[in-house]
Image (tube, rainbow, N blue to C red; front, side, top):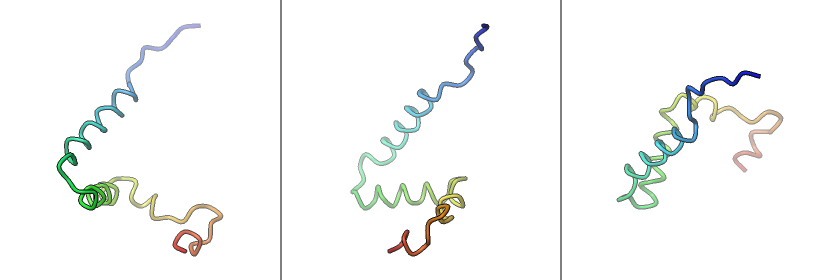
Amino acid sequence: MKRKTKTFDCIEMKRRIQEKIYEDTKGMTRVEAREYMRQRIANSRFASFLDRPASGTPSAARHG
């Protein structure tokens, strides 16, 4: 069995992203950090995915 050469390191990417978030938020209050994360999510490519109701879950249960 031949092994493929690894071209992407997800652990390295995760650490790089965490370091950036830490640097961006290290002087912020909890409220400021929460708003920072809310803005990052709202402006990400995943925003529309996160706005959809969960499959089989009534929307009232999500907001209730």
